[in-house]
Amino acid sequence: MTDRSGIICAGNWIVDLIHDLDRWPNESELVRIGTQARGVGGGPANVITTLAKLETGLPLYPMGAIGEDEYGAFILKECSRLGLPTSGLISKTEVATAHTHVMSVAGQSRTFFYQGGANDTLNINDFPEGTFKGTSARIFYLGYLTLLRNLDQIIDDNSTNAAEVLKRAQNAGLVTCVDLVSIHHPEFSRIVESAAPFVDFLISNEIEAAQATGTRVDEETLTSVEALTQMAHGMLDLGVRKAVIIHCVERVVWMDTNRDVFVIEVELVRPEEIASNLGAGDAFCAGLLYGIHESRGPERAIQLGNAAARASLKGLTATSAISAAAIKSLC
Image 1 (cartoon, rainbow, N blue to C red):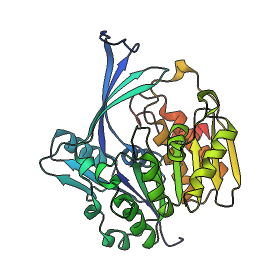
Image 2: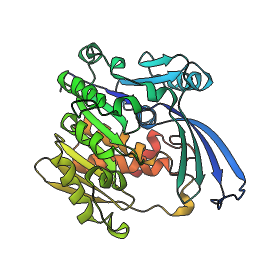
Image 3: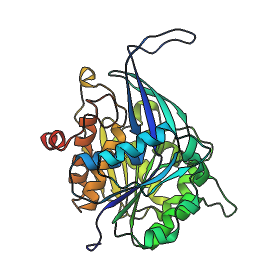
């Protein structure tokens, strides 16, 4: 590990079109859009942008697929602005760059209308073994499992191509980190189970953890320490190699393969202080990955993740409010 440095961020690359609403409408009702914004989104994009803005000095490598269109050009421009290499972003012909219409109500939640585009075409051939064997990076991050249509498909041996990608990265000596997404998918648990043996650190929120483990818990107690711990046990039982980290608004639970548990309570942010919670989970993941990369230990890694998530809440896009100074002030 000591001769490696850097993080590869692979998977969904999306253009977020954020619409700020004053309230959520009833069916067939009209509501006015206030502020609008455009930003690069998706787990890898948000994580790598946050890491770049934290000025960590780590080598950062984007990987994924985009279309040859206006949104694809926007992603390339944003990467170049951050000083990120773009050779790992494959331009796909005759397919659009993925994009999401994000409906955001300040202080509340957000709803996503997603068009998968080039992300849906990302396949095993886009991750040749030579890519991993030739890298000096330390961590390979893949996000979001269950939102990569081609890679998520269950194949004949009850595995997935996403699992094979993770296996290739592990065999090349990288630490693998996977993030999930809150989506209804009929094969959600099977996709996670297939990938788990090739995942060193599995990161999810409480909804995703419940889907992955088939947990049926009352909504009011889903975020209790007991429920989160139970779900962490369940995901480790699938074969995750180092640790499961489950985050929610109230707390974070980290459980390693020795079944040692670290619980960190989260200081709540007042609704009036939140511009949007778009990308807060990805910001948390970025801080967490930096802590893992630097071997900071569970408590410090979680603290970094929480600080990044808290800073992200101040901006309308996923990463617009994040800066090294903002994170430092919260740690």
